[in-house]
Image 1 (cartoon, one colour):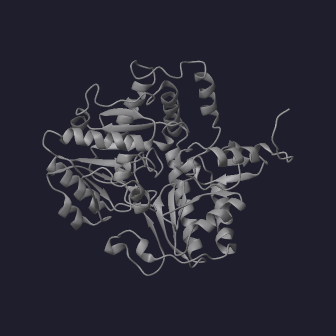
Image 2 (cartoon, rainbow, N blue to C red):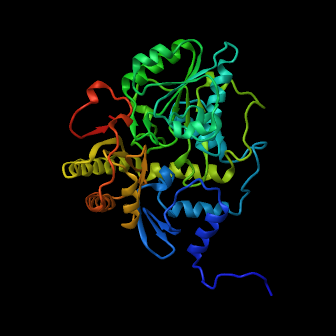
Image 3 (tube, rainbow, N blue to C red):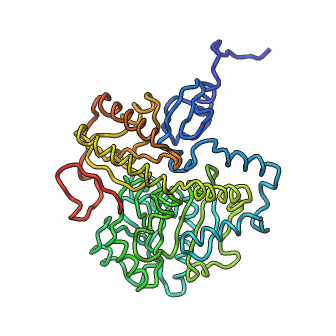
Length: 433
């Protein structure tokens, strides 16, 4: 007989899973009380069988939605092959994947990681290594940026709420006001080894980098022998309707970091670099036990093949245009929508009120999205989303905004710097074009 009292209540599997999570997991996430058990395309289903339209896509990871037939077939095939052999040996998928990514990006060499933040860490190391002999150690990053939660990536992430509990962080990092070319020029000198930017800021509220800022950053990096690092972790691999968001600007970056959608739902990231910077790494200077394993690289190759075969970047553009048009019409009805920003299927709806209550209301209505920067509702639907599903979202979203009690207002001063020609009194749509 087992001593001690136990509750007579019988838990459902979902309740048991949430109870264990509450008791044993480190308390780092706020989650609604539901457990997803299966998915199909752009829909997720909880353990009670309730259906949810997924417009968050695992935070830009599930670009192919859920249970894509080709992904399922590949997983079944690879299950009987070696899942891990380490980077001490070649595998059959890593080289071909590096080849494709180099061609897509305009870079020369690739290093595989397990996540986006690990890719950022490696990119910062690479830039420091390249500038080591000439004494270049300073790193510039942008206000409102987000690059990850590990120590180096956190050091180039701007928000105080992420940084302050872990200070002091990596030294010699300075922040430049977003899209402020004059401040960029004042802080960029020969001691800078890198500047890291997001062409379209994600966690910071879906803010497009101006052409003028990118162009000047490219010029200054070239002049001073520093690396221009493009963080494409969220915006890359087709999310904006281009292979990479930086492809809307003149000139290439020196280093690119990617992750999120790359392996179709499994963890895989990459650092891609021009030869002048990639050559700063020699055997023993950097490494990864799991990065670029056979399973994740096989999935990444299949992901790229599906995107090409099914013309998904074209669908991203079409559905993104449909979504932006619908949100523009909605702005005329909802007076607390301040602005709609983004490109392709990476869209932010900037509110003049707190956004989290609408995220909670959306879950109740079977829609998944999230709130970033406290007042920007972020949409990251799968690349496979259909015209009908976008229309379904827009109808539900209007009801969510109209019928949810209006929350507290937020300050306009929380907004990042915008170029003067972008400012206007009325709500507007900003597309990165």
